[in-house]
Image (tube, rainbow, N blue to C red; front, side):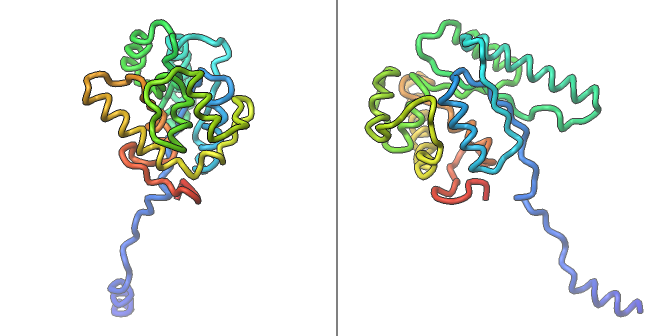
Length: 226
């Protein structure tokens, strides 16, 4: 009997950890935009099959500093809930604020508060439409919000903030990440990180997708979560 058991053991392979089964981080996204950003992100998280992403809209229509304060409050509340219920799953692993530069005041203060409290920022300069355009073409160069909308409508004539459909952007996602990373590198090389045009949305989407935030590995036509 002992001999038979030894024989079986010799042919048994050690169990391997399946990385695809690792739980994805719990992510909170607090959006400045009332329609465009949350609609895109809702469609993106569905594409990635990631239910551990919560997307909130700032109903107060506040400036970025107000947005960061709200995100910080939500983060602290989740930590308090986790401590009270003795359940670490109630904490957010990542908290993000999504907003545009536009002509908002107190941007440096918002960045400082976020950095000091573990909150990540997905900032678009000048507007979120830049990120959408990068799904279709290279950067159009420095542009204002209204010019970006006009350029985007060249690809999507029916584009409307209230009816954005993520499927229109899915096939160009990987290209958008690559183009965004190039813009970041170009801005950093000039000593002006975050200049117009840049967008940090790709870092958030890669976190949602489960990528490493450094390379775009999503499947252009299939399941982004594979």
